[in-house]
Image (cartoon, rainbow, N blue to C red; front, side):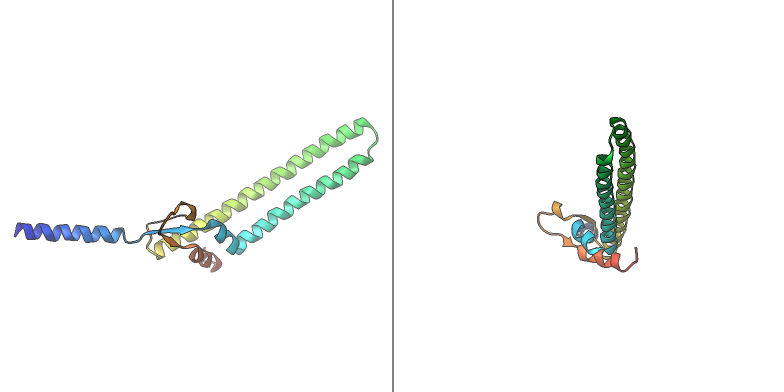
Length: 149
């Protein structure tokens, strides 16, 4: 009788343990998700537009620099332009950081929802999976596009 009880308890532990491991691992291709996520694409376009503004700023400043005649004017112009350029580059880096953080947080929140809905144990980057796993990239994209995040 004791052996039967022990066998039943052991079987129960094994079954409960195997159900806890039944979820598996999902993987996500973040590049694919970003390419399929309209907010990420608009952020990239906004950042690229700011970078083009800086390039145009430098082209305009170069034309103005060539029109200067004295070394003192050129030195003052270089210093002023350097300060302006630094401010514009800092603003671009701040914008890039803000957008990347926003996109990352939204992708992470969508991935967490998919993790729960699909009853997975973890979601990792697709480059870390050698064999197996479940690709949840499309599910994350759908979640992001649905506006639930």
